[in-house]
Image 1 (cartoon, rainbow, N blue to C red):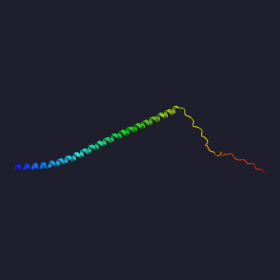
Image 2 (image 1 turned 90 degrees about the vertical axis):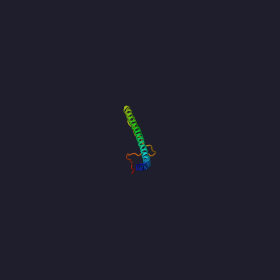
Image 3 (image 1 turned 120 degrees about the vertical axis):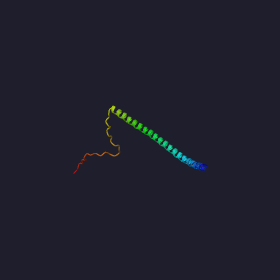
Image 4 (image 1 turned 180 degrees about the vertical axis):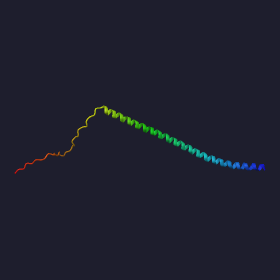
Length: 105
């Protein structure tokens, strides 16, 4: 009898061994997919961080340049704005003075 049990046990082991290989293969695919997803998310976060650093640097440079321009304009004497020029046109100018007509009788 003990011999018979050993044969059944070895048959069960062989069937289970095939099932374990299938499960390991499935879990391996899942683990590789999770690793790829983690690497992709890491790369995305790194690129976003680099882009944010570039935008911050550009904003600081623009603010510094604007401040320098403001300081330069304050150090120079201010000029009065130019007088408005009359429009250039070929039409005669109208006068607002009353017209006096002499009436002859």
